[in-house]
Length: 69
Image 1 (cartoon, rainbow, N blue to C red):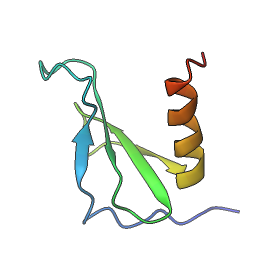
Image 2 (image 1 turned 180 degrees about the horizontal axis):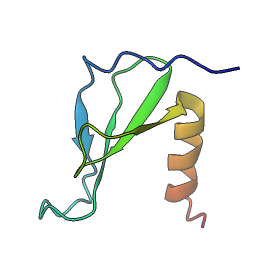
Image 3 (image 1 turned 135 degrees about the horizontal axis):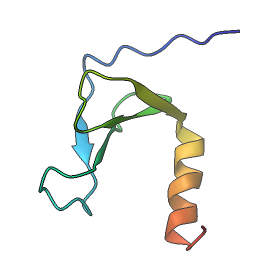
Image 4 (image 1 turned 90 degrees about the horizontal axis):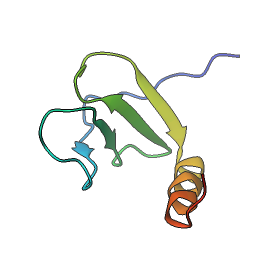
């Protein structure tokens, strides 16, 4: 079964606060799309996006904060 991708025209993309802003390897995410967190390469704004369920994204961030590898 294939899922439908959300409409990202209203997405508000942001880079991590850890990004140096020098145009290097950065990811952007949009956290204003209900039910999903899309992630993209900041150097390829029209390229593919990865979509994470909100609960999966929260678990990922919590793991990083807790020092999980």
